Length: 184
Image (cartoon, rainbow, N blue to C red; front, side, top):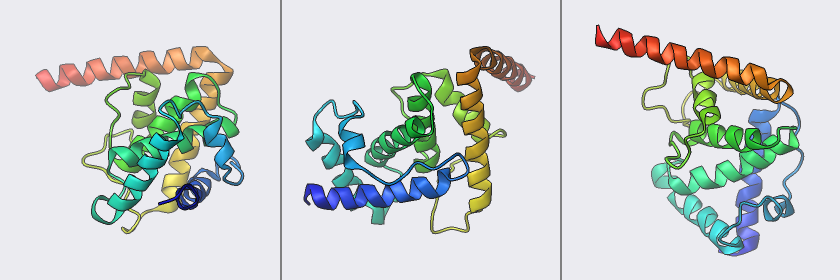
């Protein structure tokens, strides 16, 4: 598979992001240069293209529940979050959070509380064996609304870092309460 074919796949995935993120703002058209300039290509362009190719080959059997899809969608969603105005750690936390929700996989290398809060905000009552199955009856309007709510929260954290501290403290208090409840 060539870089051109990989770019077509990335363009398809970008359009999916654009569709789901539209209530957060317009991320614009796909531009491969955004990936090159993102800082994600630590292993070089070939490593990322390899992930795109592998993701595509595994789609028929595994859907998006692969580490390659998690990587590719994280990169694209982080770039999209930057285009929507998130910066610093917030854009990458939002990108990884979205990719986790989209693929049903967790990134074990991330212990960023913002990533955990993304999932908690998206799934306030938890998710059991969740996978974003595009072939199933998916409530698209609900998914878009949830993304909008999470994005607005992230933007609020960016505008006022105290909001993030307050949300983190609330989440930690709730986690402790549930832990105590489980012990009863």
